[in-house]
Image (cartoon, rainbow, N blue to C red):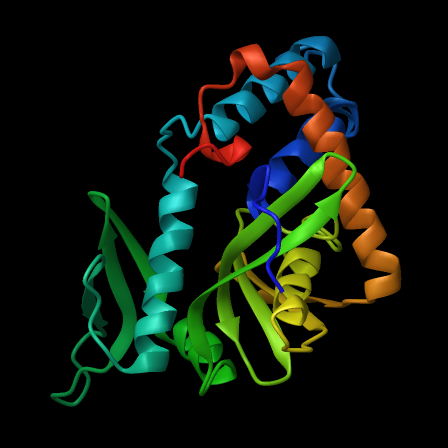
Length: 256
């Protein structure tokens, strides 16, 4: 059956950016509520979050060492799973000191975007072994109906297993439930389901490069699809209210 042309195109992390804007006050309180001399007032922080969201919508390039580290780590894991060399990250082995005339591999040095990152081999193996046989970087998309018209949802699943979806997260610091307000664990299972693949288990597999953590979620269509529709409709209202600031045509499905 032919579906109507979408009126909007959203990817999962764009919905995350909108959530961060909506939760500006709570985020400010988490990081600076205890501070006698915060770097910005709640109102100033809300404005920064607003501008960050507009920049994300408009695909303004940004430079982030933390994002590059996450990209490099993800690519290293994918290469280990697929037993291949990378065409975008230069990887070297880090060797131990000589013991009894021998050296062993203790880590991997990844160079990406002119930055070097050293990852312990034990951590890389822990992730790669966990995803043995996974399909990596699987693009998914599906149409979501809203009161404003159809939205094309899309994104890339880091690691797709037969019975579960996985997203690798790297972070400077971790607290329990850090990713519960993210949208990958709803968007990706929804897209899979709309394409005939009923995979409802989702894990964020997280490392701060000192330890590893897991957040597990189960996609429940009757609960999660209405929540997803509501969030997308709220986002569309935001887009319509701020259309004069938006230069990217793809979000309005005007790129075809």
